[in-house]
Length: 506
Image (cartoon, rainbow, N blue to C red):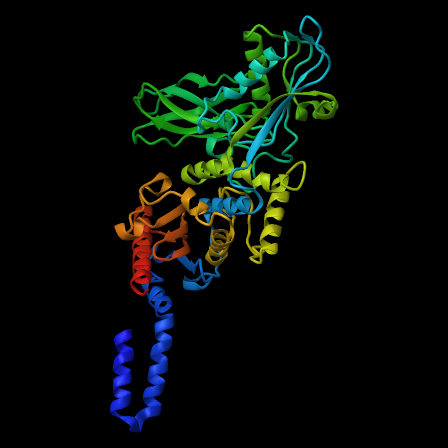
């Protein structure tokens, strides 16, 4: 480009008779120098190269420092984002909480403790929707919370409880699952409900032994043991393909899970996971049994605030009249977001989305949290009111957002927050987490930090490129007919061409 300006200047001086013509050329070349990177980057994206004839695709790239769109294609069109929607949830949380923020689950007791250690009252678990409580994805063992409560009860001198353990799950109201999720997903571990008290990732594992093809598998074990849980596997069979195509079906608070489909034949053990019907009650029951094993008598069986309400009973005002026994804190928000984005954990995403409304209200609902999220972005000057958002995880196939909206939110968080690199550093790079199958050019891969999103006919990536300059990027493909591996390769090639062009034009 610089050589073009030099050649244009030389011609001007060599032929003054056409000065006005060459002056126009000189100005045009200077303008091209300023906007050359954008034009070259735009050309690097081939609109029809992704997904085959039936596919629709879109792209947006924004320069974080200037806020300028440097490449776009159908950037204002709406696409199903799949799990890249978790980035919207993460970006919103970083707008209303500090990265070091922790969630706190509190344990209270009411009544009095006699000299012999008899508590004439109840124990209450006051939930906050913490998805990490008893989770296998934290640095502490899953039983840590229960053990902490047992220890705190002993330290308070309590040897017997006349009442019961009550799980106060009022922090999150409404349907625990999203009404716009697919029925084939609800009941499975990856579509677990979101409750005021979540525990042990809200899941259970069923283990089978499989025999000959077309035979019925034998149920060996359910872990953990859930009182009242019934697995109806009447329609389950084995197959020759070696593919697990079995799905649980069941609603929140219902203790029958129906299992349809088939499992690979000739397996000594084969496990599949479902979602707990009532995690708050499960935790209260687990704690009751743990106290009894520790020699502390508990007079009545566990219950929850929901169960008391449905039976016409009111929950005592234990938080003001009772005594605080324990504060249990979660990992930091940044740590929970890292897990959410790296492993694409839907339960974490849904639970953290509900924290958006809990920042301004004592209880939260899904609709209230989504409206509060939209309000936050309206006030920031980047409205997403036109987007169709039904959840925080992207599991609903009815979600819609544009690549431009996605990039604007990402760019704003990177530019305006105290630690602008935080969200990028929470994301996996190609070869890590859910990006194992994304293979752009090595020089580009080193600077990419992306969240993937995939479901039937959907493949999306969004996040950041941190090279000589930092960019927010979103690339989306819907309705593709090509094999997913080919779509992923085409997207990787597009990102490689795009960012190599931007780097070379700087």
